[in-house]
Image (tube, rainbow, N blue to C red):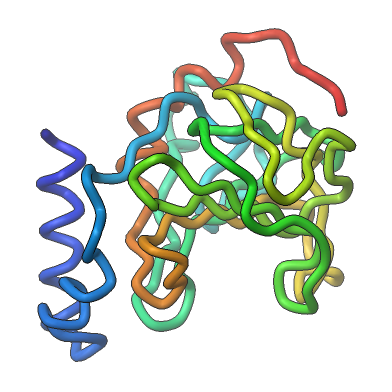
Length: 197
C-alpha cells in the first residue's frame, strides 16, 4: 500500500512539473493488472544507492549513519536510480519474469530488461557482464543472476554502478522512481550468498 501511495505521489509531482499529463500516465498503464513490486534488492552486496557525497562508500544495511541510500531519479532526465558498488558485484533479479531485452545498446551498455506478469519492466544497465543464462524469452526467478556491476555504455568513463529503472508497458519514458521499492527490500542486498554468473 505504501509503495502504491508513493508511486501516486511521485506521478503527481511529475505531472505538476510539466513532464506529462494524467492521460499520458493512464495510457502508459493501460492493461496493467497490478502495481510495480520488488521481492529482492538487485545488487547482491555492499552498495550505495543514489548519487551523493558518499557514493564511493559501499555498505550493507543497516547502513551507517550518513551513508543512507537516496534517490537520484529526475523526471524527464534520469529515469532510474544509480546503485554504486565494486566492479563485479553480482546483480540479481529483483522480480520474477521474462527477459524481454538483453545485450548491448550505446546508452545502457550491457543491459537486461525483465517484464513481470503485470507488464512492469525492470531495467538493469551498465553491466560488466550478462549471465550466460539470460536470453530474450528466458524466465527468471527472484534472485537469479542477471550479471555483474560495471560501467558500460554511456557510463564508460564513470564509476561502476547499476542503473535500475521501473516502467510500465515497455514505455521507458513513463518510468517511476524505483527508490521506495528499493528501500523496501534493501535488507536483502547482503542477506543471501552472492551468486556468480
